[in-house]
Image (tube, rainbow, N blue to C red; front, side):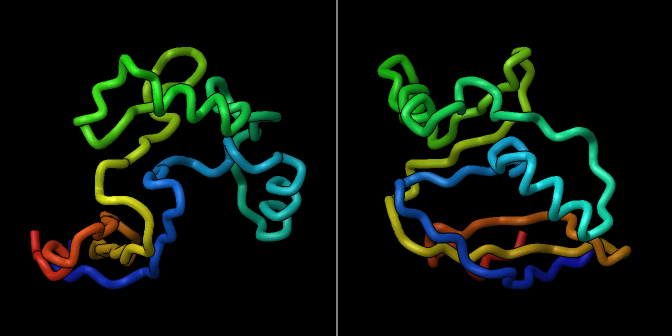
Length: 128
């Protein structure tokens, strides 16, 4: 694995939080499947609609803003409807809206082995 981070781009935030998860659960499958077919990518069957509690943005906000949530954590794990983790992770508590640098590291095979989003300039050049 390379120890060098390379800038992949920027991520815009306008809700004070950022989502890390598989987009196939949030893009209508008819559009996604057409594009996937055009690219020749083989993927498992796409869901027809997002799993609960993410059917609508309001439902998502209800979960995020639930008064029982420990807002000091800075993140929230979302589970699939069946109850197991992995649907996605919401990250908040980093200071609010803006545009933030996204960096990746590549392994010896050239594939992305790690990614990070830098919310504070203090961490931007930090090597791990």
